Image (cartoon, rainbow over all chains, first blue to last red; front, top):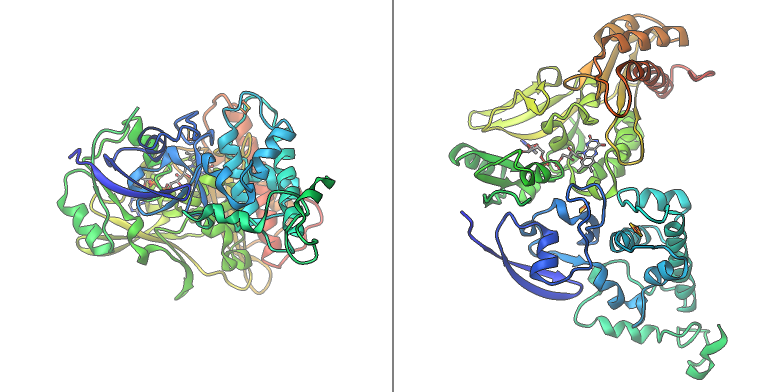
Length: 214
Length: 295
Ligand SMILES: Cc1cc2nc3c(=O)[nH]c(=O)nc-3n(C[C@H](O)[C@H](O)[C@H](O)COP(=O)(O)OP(=O)(O)OC[C@H]3O[C@@H](n4cnc5c(N)ncnc54)[C@H](O)[C@@H]3O)c2cc1C
Ligand code: FES
Ligand code: FES
């Protein structure tokens, strides 16, 4: 009855196998079986959103799903943000936004906020303030008053847009975790990380030394 | 707390699920899990077996067919919010979907799961009542159609048998002169209702109300119909005076309890106001009246 089941999860682009009891929650599998403690547990009842992850591109609360239900799925946790092509080997624009706009204080809610923000920008790259507030309405923050979180997500939207423009109009973050994978680092070939540099047609000849214009 | 250990089954057809329900010890169905998972974790439910129906692709639909809007057991709240057919002709469903919980929960939770959960604070039960809809259940002896009025018994208790699987909920497709709406009062985005009202109005050729449906959320031991208010409306022409009377009757029929969010008399007053607003929207959406004043 407490038989363990073998599951295959593709987490942040890497295929992982775990053995868990059917009653194991996805959030516990991520944190304890896979040692990915970026996904937080706040309320345990589905109210706070700290445990938000993307499963096959959709944001869900990982404290309200059993790990067995995610068998065969692709999962993105906050740890995977830096691996996304848009991060260009550094911080993802969303992470940068929370840093630049002071989108956090204690940081407990931040992983869930970033993932909720990611889900929004994948669907709607140019959200207005109401749409941002709606997208994070399942995520509680006890510290910031939300204003700076909204600004952080706006920052990321602007940043992603300007990088896409610099990239010749092709969005460089191809919308969901399926763009990840063992080949994730190849994303760098379309963006060297320097603004207005080697980004595509019409952006100059890719002279790295010239990248300091910003 | 962790859920107590359980056996986990993943049938891929409805028949398989029903035979599992019949043959296994103390089974429970897992749909979106947005109500069940917390109940298992607090051990308010302790089933021996959990039958996860998410692999039954045949239950994943939302369509108009044979005179009904049919919502399959795997249609999520988010699917209702996104469906074109809902935006075009089902005002109450379009109003309700974005008001249920929050985006993450709407991606997982199902309309059928919510109705089967029979939480008096659940939003969809009121919509189903206002539309005189039905719950379709599959059991060992075949299919059964349970009218919404006969479905809810007590909080978290319905007339569904233990060995029955709900395959869909359905409501009649709207007439040409029909409109519906849902209004909900809550403290903040994502909360359950303090009070909610679903309305449906069908008009005859003369512009009189032929059929009125009113379902109320969070103000009785189950989702409840406001029958006196419905009776008052039927046969009449819409007017703000008439809707005011209906609002008062609905408030009288409600039985809210005082709690930390407000006392009973406040909630009654809110039912009055929400009923008037939802009737106004329904009438306007039916294309029969153009509202000049909103209550
Ligand atoms: C933080 C939070 C906020 C919420 N806010 C709201 C809100 O504002 N409004 C609202 O209405 N709800 C709200 N809910 C409740 C929740 O959205 C719904 O009750 C939920 O979506 C139920 O659907 P489910 O598919 O997740 O059902 P599950 O949790 O999987 O199941 C619920 C119950 O129904 C049974 N069941 C499910 N499907 C079937 C079937 N096909 N046949 C037979 N039995 C079945 C299960 O066995 C279980 O007893 C909230 C929940 C949370 C955690
Ligand atoms: S821990 Fe999952 S929503 Fe709070
Ligand atoms: S920063 Fe502390 S909870 Fe959000």
